Length: 270
Image (cartoon, rainbow, N blue to C red; front, side, top):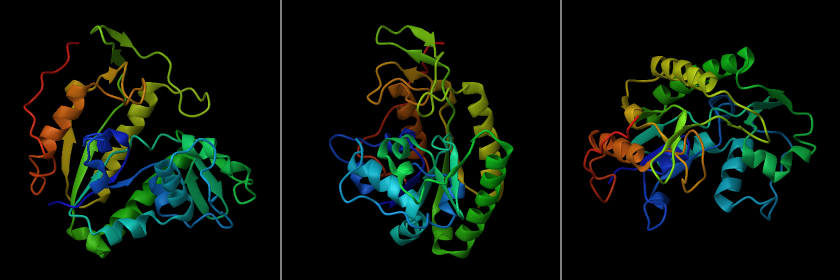
């Protein structure tokens, strides 16, 4: 059986059943950014023993890993046969504190950790700024070098090419534009700006990394109004996930990645 690691977001994790088993067999790395993945840990940060705010255990675990910088060690220790990347979590602003970088994710905001002395002096680096993009490009280049110099080089890499949907489908089948998007705490976002960022990120990543497979369910990229996680430009209709799963099992070594096989879905009506 393949040992699959996901460095990305729920758009890839949700390909496996969340209820009824499957996702627990994966290494799922989320709520981090490549600059944070390669940076020093946040000095002086101490996680709470009890879950802070309203965070669930898996949310807190991902946040602490981003702050303590244990993710890369965990990934290498897992010895994955396949690593699937998506960049949907690369939407959060970065926090710069001392020599460390971390994602200002929703979990960060909800945790209250920004009030700790270790994070009190943190400076925000806006995600769409030139500074954030430069940090990202430098980190991806460094990550590619790390991969080539470690046992990670033996893994098969897969890029799940994703974009934000600009329309959603309601339960009655009607399509409507997505006209209000927030990142964190009321921070408004323009879908086209973040999709353009994803274009640049994917191009740089493919240039920096060893050859990899690429999956793309673009014709099915439509948000679902009543998605289990709520309406969002990257919470898609079922046909999207079905198509990505169908493409994944066509990749060498992933034939048994899922317990069931899916026929090719029909694209949602425009």
